[in-house]
Length: 194
Image (cartoon, rainbow, N blue to C red; front, side, top):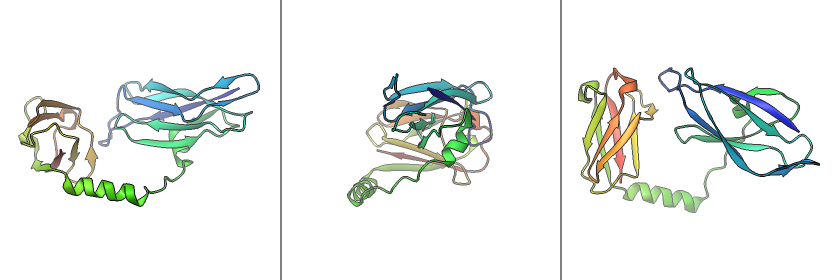
C-alpha cells in the first residue's frame, strides 16, 4: 500500500500567500489491493500561514483501478489528476500538469447555458478604492429583487478576484468585503447576476 506526499503553496492572485486556505482532495472512484479496500472519499487540508500544505494521498500500486483525484481550491476551481505509482512525493503543480484536458460540454448543455446568460438579469458597475468603506467593504444596492446567483469582481486588468466575504443584506443589496486587496489600483468592475 503506497502513499504519496503531495505538497503545494496556495497564493491569492495578488501574490500574497493564502493563509489557512482549505484545499480538498476527493478520490473519484474507489479501488482495492489484495488486502485492503479504498472506497471513494474526501480529505481537506488547511494550508499554514504561508499558504503551504502537504497531504498524503493513496496511490494504487497493486490494483487495476488507478488513484484518480479531484482537487478543489477555496475559490471552487477544480482539476483532476491521477497519482502515478513509483514516487514518494510530488508537488500539486506537477500533478496538475499531468491532468487531462476536460472535453467541452455537449451542445445542448452549452445552448442551455448561453440562453440562461442571455435571459439573466444583471447589475454592473465600476468602482475604485474611494468607493470602499474604511473597513474595505463595497455596499451595493442592485435592485434585482432577488438574491444574486452570481457575483463577479475583476481588477482593472480584467483578472477575476474572489472577494474576502459577501454579505447579503436583503434581496436588493449586498456588501462585498475587499479589504485584503487594498489599496485597489485603478478602476475595478463588479457584476451581479440574478
